[in-house]
Length: 113
Image 1 (cartoon, rainbow, N blue to C red):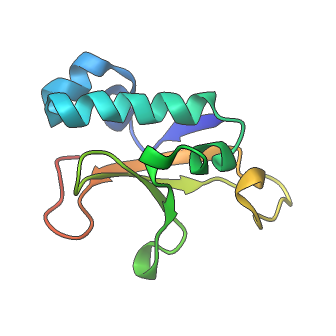
Image 2 (image 1 turned 90 degrees about the vertical axis):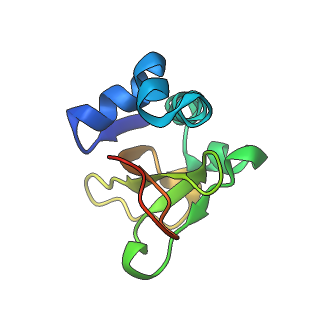
């Protein structure tokens, strides 16, 4: 799957394990780079849904167009599916491009961006 990023900063945090661990701590940093690797290796979001520990879920409310996967509770990796052309997203298997938005605890205090 193609993975894009909202900024160069979040890209570096997601792709560089040492940088992620320095920024988020060892546990979150390690899992963050692992989850991004899983997204890159996947053919579609359906593959991520089949990883129980990732706990892929669609968000609601003001985040209704976003998805998240678990990192270390309560932090999540949040991303948005990207639609190119006239493709209509009706199933997880039709999502092949995502844009990483942030690492956050959207139920409480936000982790650094």
